[in-house]
Amino acid sequence: ALIVVTGANGFIAQHCVAALLREGYRVVGTVRGQNKVAAVKKTHKGHPGLEVVVIEDITNAQSYLDVIGPLSPAAVLHLAAPFHYQATDFEREMMIPAVQGSTAILEAAAKIKSIRRVVQTNSFASIYDASAGLSPDKTYSAQDWSPLTYEDGVKADNAPAAYRASKAAAEKAAWKFMESRVLGFDLVSLCPAMVFGPFLPEAKPTTIAGVNTSNQLVWAAVSAGRDSPVPPTRGPVWVDVRDVADAHVKALQVVEAGGCRFLLASGVYCNQELCDVSRRALPKYGDRIPVGEPGKRESHTHFGVSTAEAGQVLGVRWRSLEESLKDVVPQLFEVERGE
Ligand code: NDP
Image (spheres, rainbow, N blue to C red):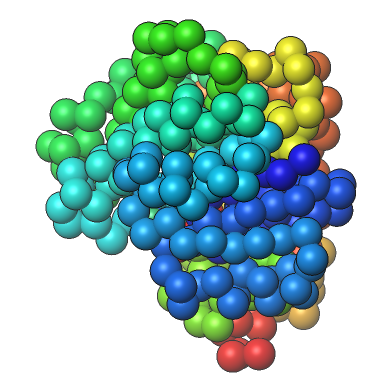
């Protein structure tokens, strides 16, 4: 079967493409400029099952119909959406691409008769209610919804808040679209926590500034310097990118997943734990990884998470923090050294 992966050059999408190709699917990846096509092909070593096409504007359903429609794909993984904290015009840079991007792919899927399922990469941000505070007695699951709206994103105080609203509003718009008509496909929503883990070898960034937003959190924690304070934890729930990719493949395969929403998380963490685990597993970088207060944990100070549905329905297993950090932290130091 042929699977469309939008934003194929992105951090998570590169692992999804690799996982699909490993499982024998054919893949058509979309990128927003011709200048990104070659890099995606190189990431997958020119795999014959991969084609890369340009969709300049992810909010334009017609462009999907023109470019993807004739290929008769069976399903779509929609990952293209802004995930950065650099936006200043939140509506133009975050809300429109996220929300209209989410509905444009559904509008196109409604007209491409071969498509039977769309899997959207939403976020823990569309589950989590930041206004409820730390809530140590609360356990978030796929049943919970962020109260954030489109307007909250437009008027947000800061870029992380605008990003969270973009994810919540995009997912709400997607389910509303699905309810409003009879369609030949179903929707699966995947809501990952902060995604950590390695880059595919051919897709390692060339500069630290080019590292994706979630792995920047790892870098900030483990590179601060041995005697520096451990930086504060931002977003205390995480998941490994390879498990997220596995969940995307399972979301295509498991019939009962249709119409469902899944929280993808290995568990809660704090930056002291990132430092403790990295110092133990990677003593080579001991002069850079803060010592802080070894063994101190923040998990009792805030909410927990339950990922029962992802385990039961999708059969996803979660890598440990050590497995994830052992693979990504050395890569990040290589990137810093320009290797
Ligand atoms: P990346 O930044 O690595 O990838 C984002 C992808 O989306 C890139 O292909 C990017 O293209 C594309 N994109 C971004 N903005 C636009 C736009 N305005 N128009 C067209 N394409 C755009 O991020 P991740 O791989 O981390 O994220 C992928 C998805 O997963 C996103 O939807 C994100 O919200 C979601 N997610 C990520 C989490 C994480 O911790 N990483 C956690 C939860 C959800 P280009 O390279 O050209 O900018």
